[in-house]
Amino acid sequence: MESLVNRAGRSQAERQRAVALETTLLCHGVPKEAARPLAEELEAIVRRAGGVPALVGVVAGVPTVGMTAEELTLLIDSGPIEKVNSANLGLAVHRRRHAATTVSATMELAAAAGVRVFATGGIGGVHRGYGERWDVSSDLAAFTRFPVAVVTSGVKSLLDVLATREALETLGVPVVGFRTDRFPAFYLRDGGTGVDARIDDLDELASFVRFELARAGHGVVVANPIPAAEQIASLEWDTWLAEATARAGDAHGRDVTPRVLALLHEISGGRTLRANLALVKSNAALAGEIACRI
Ligand code: PSU
Ligand code: MN
Image (cartoon, rainbow, N blue to C red; front, side, top):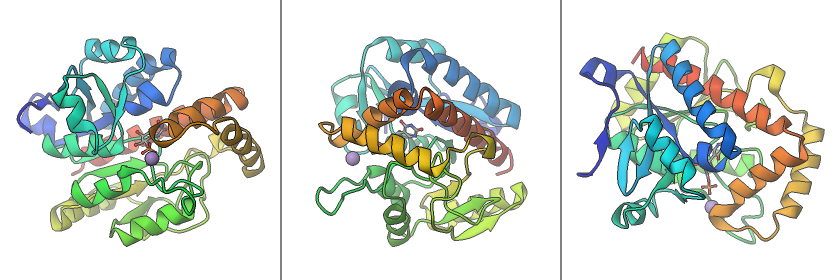
């Protein structure tokens, strides 16, 4: 991509340790006032772990890997900006728009910039009720195209977790659990299904990631469950989700995730937001640990 601005590290050595961070989580997943402090904290966490943070987004049509604090402020203050995945990323670039990148678009830009590790909260996947209305995130297909390891607390628990796990299998995407045998689902440490392999050791994890990205040229899901203390009990979760889904009834397509997340944060009295922040930070730390080892 010729117009890509790549500020993922100042030297070759720094670029090797780069960790991509996405802007959709910041611009659409948390309340506006939480976005800047969260970005700063995630960057500090990545650095402390030995990585080099690179915030990814589209600034006035320029795909940027390694956004500055000023650029992030511009995006946050520009009102509700577009949320782009691999499908509409090119349109935002062509039309010179600001845009927040989801997991798929962030993977695409990270790969173009040579960044191999990326930390997010939870990846998108197969939405519930897909039998009646098909809604499957472009995040899944992105794993078949871009050789990036995504550190994630599994898939968002508002999705059909089992169907998403099967879809990853169909697409041939390896799923490794860091210190877990279970495939996590965002606020839940156990999403009700397993991973391809459990890896407990950081050096071994980094070694597998390096090997697999080079071997297959596709992405790797590194599943890192939410810290135990922040997990939300299933019963509570089911109640909150039922209410959020009912109230989000009119949202569809790209609006579903931001709308349901915002409602959950409200209904749970901030409990899901706290959990969301905790898991993203934990993923940023693990991504930093992997990045300085590969
Ligand atoms: N994880 C979070 N909050 C978010 C998302 C993930 O903790 O807001 C975003 C990611 O950017 C992911 C997107 O790629 O939700 C998926 O949206 P959709 O289901 O519309 O593809
Ligand atoms: Mn969708």
